[in-house]
Structures are given as C-alpha cells and as structure tokens.
Amino acid sequence: MDFKPSALSDYGQIIQKLWSYQTQTDLILINREQDLGVEGLRKAKLSYHPDHMVEKFVICLAH
Image (cartoon, rainbow, N blue to C red):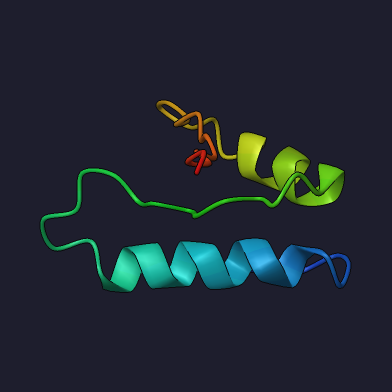
C-alpha cells in the first residue's frame, strides 16, 4: 500500500483506508455514522459510494 497525500484533506481518506484494510476480517459494511446535516461531511460520506444510507427520524411523544 502506497499512500501519498496531496493535501491535508487526504489524510481522512488515508486513515479510513488503513483502518478498513487492517480490520477487514469479516466486515461486509462499515457504518460511517451520521453526518449531522453538515454539507462537507455528507459530501465526504457520499464520496465513498455507500451501499445505502439510513434515513433517520426524531419522534416526540405528546403528553
């Protein structure tokens, strides 16, 4: 594996790749957690071409 970051933003991708290579024993999917609606995080998450994304909801119980 040869990684040469061209910018500071590349380090996140390198860390993700190294982690997934080192822990890939029986992994089928990696949960990248929520992006909190932050556009940059959403764009980064989508750049990994996810298999699917789960829609989240907030439920409030009325008294």
